[in-house]
Image (cartoon, rainbow, N blue to C red):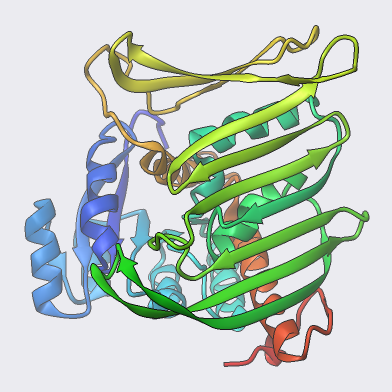
Amino acid sequence: MPHSLPLRVAIIGTARRSDYLYGPILQALPDLVTLVGVWGRSEASARRLGESLGVPWFTDLDKLVRETDPQIGVVSVSYAANGEVGLMAVEAGLHVLLETPIAHKLSEADAIIAAANQRGRKIEVAEQFHRRPLEQIKLKMIEAGLFGQVYSSFNDFAGHGYHGVSVMRSYLGFDAVPSQVTGTVRQYALTSHWSRIGNKTAPRPETQEHATVEFTDGRLGIYHWTNIGYDSPLRWWRSSRFLAEKGMGITVGVGLDVEERLSLLTPDVEAPFFVTVERRWERVDGGALISMVAHTNDPIHPTVRWDNPFRPQKQGHGVQWHDDEIGVAGCLLSLVDAVRNDAEPTYGPLQARLDQEIVIAMRESSKAGGVPVTLPFDPAAQSV
């Protein structure tokens, strides 16, 4: 397949992200993909999405495939339907970008993976948190060996469930093998306060989740989350951290306003040296993000750079995305590259399944009174 030809993509599902996120991202990348149609369960929702994005709409998935000949399906459905519709898309013969989680039950994830393997289809999962620019520059520094071995990694309200687990695992490396999860889940009553997502003020219950993840090589992952972490003035903290052989990294933030505190050693090894992380823009007064640059004072790697793969090739003629859109587009790029080159996506369904497996093991451990759950976790033992 000539790489100059964009791949044909259909959106499978009419969830809100189909219209406000995936549609605009697909249409902003004409050299990479072409949006050819959308599918929805109901005629009203399918028509609404198709008309919004200016493409044909269908309620019959087989008909969509026959008439528009897509190669990739972006599955974006209601939260509970991920597994069911993801399997439908694979069985229809599509390579798929699946929303998170890959499925709520591990048995559903296994069915999707098996169906893709049987048909020779590629699966990528829209786990974008570790693909955001600030995370990418940290991972580039870890990969360069500046921090040495990362020993322990923390998600401290940086993301919920599989998102938070994925961020935590990324610092250790996705090849690190988890062996045991110990979890605690608790519910608490909170005073009346405003919810940004619900746009109302009322008393509110809180669910806190905490877990320790042990890895086969003795390293540790620590996970914390509260279900009001995205939209409550009571729980404003957002941080991820790692402690390494030669330094450490701490994200300190209030909501999306975060600062990276990455430290190595001064040349006399008597004090921390704080790395300067710089955003480089298309213009001196803004524009699109071009790159992230870390100035390390290290004699071997004085500068570490991550280039935005979606930076404009011609000044002013490109998208000016925020970090999350860049991360989601990175998921799409991973799948496109996998399809074109008959390669594996850079994250993929097995990593997505593992993130969800750790979340499930945490909750099962809590139900059992904090008894550690050994991995791999038996899908048949998952509570509904």
